[in-house]
Length: 385
Image 1: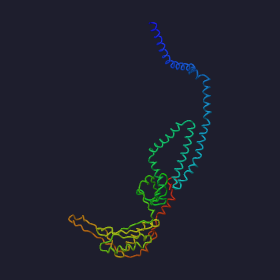
Image 2: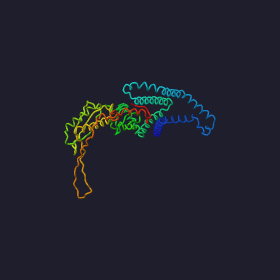
Image 3: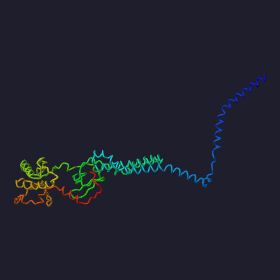
């Protein structure tokens, strides 16, 4: 009985041992492989021994030369690509801008687009060079940095950028031309030059006025040359004892007799208001501003109106006045005084007393343009319109 029990125990032990041996065998095999690999690896040399040894320096130099020899053709190819990009940037930009030239004839727009295309072509060549040199991450960093730098510069030079964009818009839309008479922010003058920075006006006093293009673009532009016909006016008052219709007819006749006054649109004489001692009316007339000066024609009309009204006994009294005599404190009466026009002692024909300067009603615009052409140019740069 005991013999059978021992035999059974031995069999069970053998089965357990085989099972454990089956599980442990892969672990022992892996451990054996690790030990074999460690023994096969060369021992770590001493740092001091390698650095100071001639063999180590020779090995490192050989490896460096080997890397240089391997990468030299690639670097040379990258340099060739950069040079080709630089050479082809200008002709390619001129070729690619051809379709845009049919859309706008602005020289500034052409210049900006051409420069932008050239820069993009050159950046593409640099990017390819960095890729071939194995500096892909550096190339991406450069591209990202370029955009970031552009954003920073945009905020730092916001006013300059705004002025430049306004110059582009002015060159495209062209609300005025060179030698046009315009008014911007109350400044009236002749456009002499428009650069990428400012618009130069020459006023009728001969002064050069430089207005930033951003200011010109954002404000109201009054163009006095787009329509050469310009309206002027003359105001005059007559006494209440006169025939209003006769005075209006006479004023209209005088205006139509002037060579500088246009018949289309016709002149008009309209009552403005009723004053204390006069009936005030306004004479509206039209002239060609390119040929005649509105101020000079108005001056001539006022001179003719005074002479003709006087000759036709049409009174032109001044406003009623109050006179207070301070010498007598007991006198408090206030008496209105009405002045009568002084009749001319001798009627002289207007045509006999006119001089050349008084009769000159020509426009001053051409003279100012000539002065602007002869004066020193205070703004450097080319015209963009």
